[in-house]
Length: 563
Image 1 (spheres, rainbow, N blue to C red):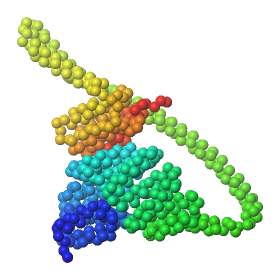
Image 2 (tube, helix red, strand yellow):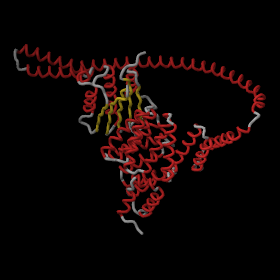
Image 3 (tube, helix red, strand yellow):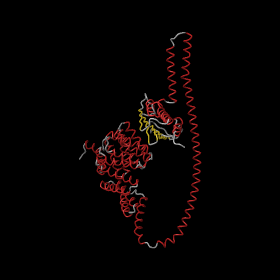
Image 4 (spheres, rainbow, N blue to C red):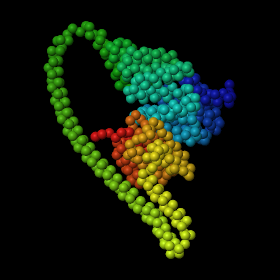
């Protein structure tokens, strides 16, 4: 029987929870759609079918097939001119290949999110902000990960994405877990479990038990961890969810081994091994063999009665090994100390060179600023004062007051120019209204009258902070915006200022042309910005490459550490 257009649309828009509940059926349906649309020109519906196939194969653990269908979906959307579909497929493929090629995953995710932001696809952005946070988490950047998880959760609540809300909650809970904030992590997981149970999301509930198991295991609550993994095992077995079932079996094996239940641990390990495919590593096989050996040893211990006789023969060998080990350790300690001393000397020399370079950069910047002010005073204020003097002398010699209005106008212009110069030296907005309003005003004025869409956001910033910190952040932002105006050719600029515990984080991102950092970057002020960040006790990180935009991140402490 042929497929109607309405049925095709229903199949390619298959909800995630329906797809995940029966992966085999979902894959079969998408292939029927592709067969039905085989002779039709490139279309978004065919791209959606390919995208569902990529997700389904990823859930089954067939990662090569998932990558193949993901690339086919991207090409299909691109040929059909569907930018939203292309961006969604890029983000989906990036998330699926995160464990095999994190660098490529970051590139794909940035391209996909840029397409979705331009198209204002809020529902898709909500889920993919979350996935972007996962990539940052895998790279160890927990601050950026938490930031994108929060943006995702806020947007999902705004658009009413009840399926995605618990996923973002789990990600926030995982970051708290990694930070050691177990109570906060448990609260996030509880909220996520309630949301998934309310939706009758069987796969989600199964995954949630695994989250609780990992949390309780790290927390030292072994009994609770075993209970959570057992519930996960029951759920994943019932759902035919092999990757989740394997994870539960492996963790139960480890925990029972730690508790001394070697036979039960071996049983779980064998079950986990049976699920693995041809890519099973030799290391995992050795782990199962070790468990078997421990079990046999435990059974034989009761019949061993000759250990004392063997111990006498082995004692000499043991003492000899101990002596050799002691000598090796002593020699290793000496070599390590010499190496550490050399490394400290090299590090001290590097610090001295870095400080000298920083001082030179500061002196050079100061001298350049003096030259600029000199030119401004000579070419602007100086010439205007000369013109005023000339007109006053003319008025005195002619005895006429007709030139006074013109002189007053020139004096007003001169006064304005002097005020502008003073504002450049020390923006009065910093002292009058604080850093957040001053930076918001700076971003607005920098791109006023241009086609660039500039956005500024802040969260948790105190109204007052140490003057050198406020001034430093203002100057760094000013230099970054100047670089974007001069070099980036960007259509969109996003400036975020937020507090993370006892640090202030500044993120400035554009979608411009970017650049390669192989050559000199003196002309765009990178050394000066880096020196300013170090002077504030923080650091400056720039991520960019040709054609892929730029992301600058400054992280500085609220209070300068004492030395």
